Length: 236
Image 1 (cartoon, rainbow, N blue to C red):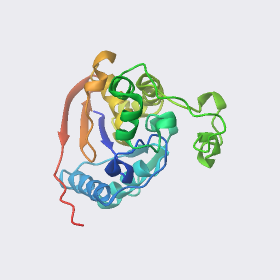
Image 2: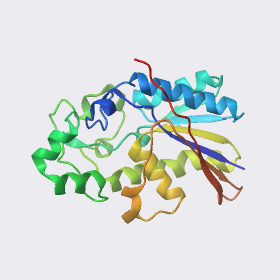
Image 3: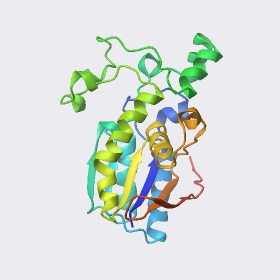
């Protein structure tokens, strides 16, 4: 029986500051590091034997996975990274404070993009220094694959495609798979696994540092799903 564990990275610096992050490669905040350690402790305490780990290309997801593996003493397992598990690309909104964006564009448009399924923030220009083409880690991507903004629908397309390409084959073999990713890419996978319609995807909440666990039978029928969560007290 395959077991899938989805975790949204621990809180990042920009999560704490309420800034749109998207593909911007910011680091974990102290609370995010504590959340990742707690997740690793829960995996160890519950004797969960993870066989393989996946994450996005972004350091907040990579570091969350690395801290979990170190804490749970499973650093020997294979660790695979894919841009298809990246957070949703927020276009020109990336790097802007969410409250300031809301004041600038108005409540209606803000929430239409933020929580809608088909709408995206304004796109980055081709010469904007925030464009992924200027980031070395995306040098091997086809230009047609590099987003300049994304809707939630766009994010779900690439994340779910990768799920079936790379993750499902591991689950079919009966492996336990850890995926460390982001609010929107995790939300996309959850809605696919739980067969939640597109109109309801925006209502799915994904908390940082929580282990969302899905048990499948040998034919990939979902048998059980539950969460493991422990509160983190951050001492500054």
